[in-house]
Length: 189
Image (cartoon, rainbow, N blue to C red; front, side, top):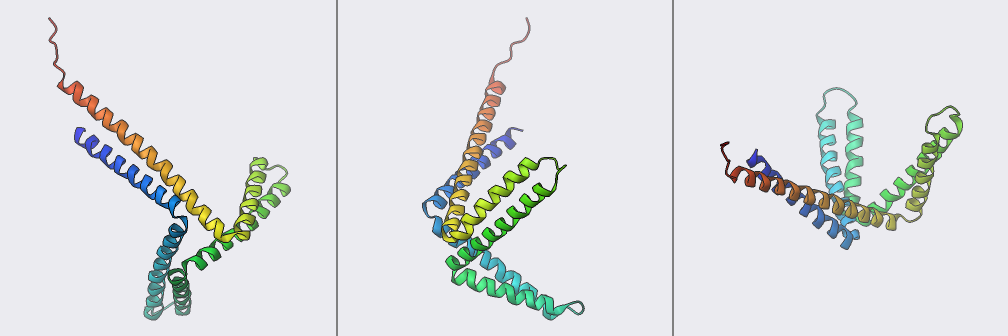
């Protein structure tokens, strides 16, 4: 158990430090954080596109044309994400904004039409939040992408602090185990 706790606290502290560093970097350079994320998504789309093309050309049965079409679409997305990450981030944020607006409208409609619905207030609140966020995202896609990077950075810092504190608490427990294990035992007399 002592060896497990010794490794555990070190891993928790390392995760906490990494979370803090990632969060600080995301807050210091939000534009670069968004660009890096979009490029990583572009690499994923590239790998996915190549895989879909291989399936399309190699599949004996089934709708080969769907695999080929998906592969080509993935390659187009990959090209834009890798070579124009800022445009891709803005477009993606704009699409998320539209999705949030549509979602908000449907949530408000569901709340209005569901007279016996439990939790209608939460549905209305959720719909309003989605509408506000959707309008903000769609109207300001560049700023919204940076806002997402900021949010990601703040969440990373919060989780980094949590892991750091938990790691130090586990370390303290390990030290207490060492202290009780090294204490002399008094025989009843």
